[in-house]
Picture 1 (cartoon, helix red, strand yellow):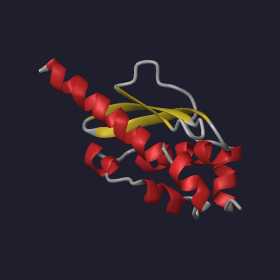
Picture 2 (picture 1 turned 45 degrees about the horizontal axis):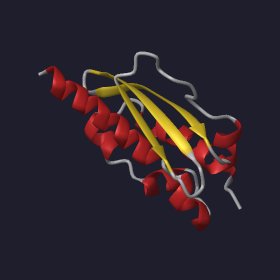
Picture 3 (picture 1 turned 180 degrees about the horizontal axis):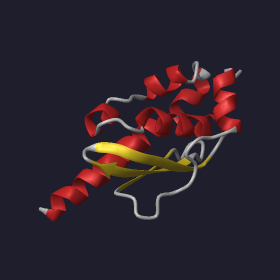
Picture 4 (picture 1 turned 180 degrees about the vertical axis):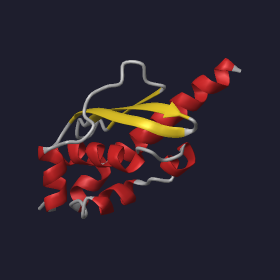
Length: 125
């Protein structure tokens, strides 16, 4: 049902945890399946210097959270905003169709964290 890459990111998630002094925090969830994700970002010189996550959910939710942090780290904000749910799923070797809508919230969480960061930057001006 799941690709080997999904299972690897589920068993050995990368960048799990939180960033206490995060520049942006994105919280997303799906009330249908109960998956909840929080993505934390640290920005330096317009790039994502660090990206971490905390996820409560199924194996696919954990795997997509792990994968999106790997994909986003080191990217500019603009590049990170172009990471889509489909990009994350493809990087994991695909997700079962039934898991696409509820488990792949990771790109939304990343985008929400960037929006939070940008909002904070605007309020400082």
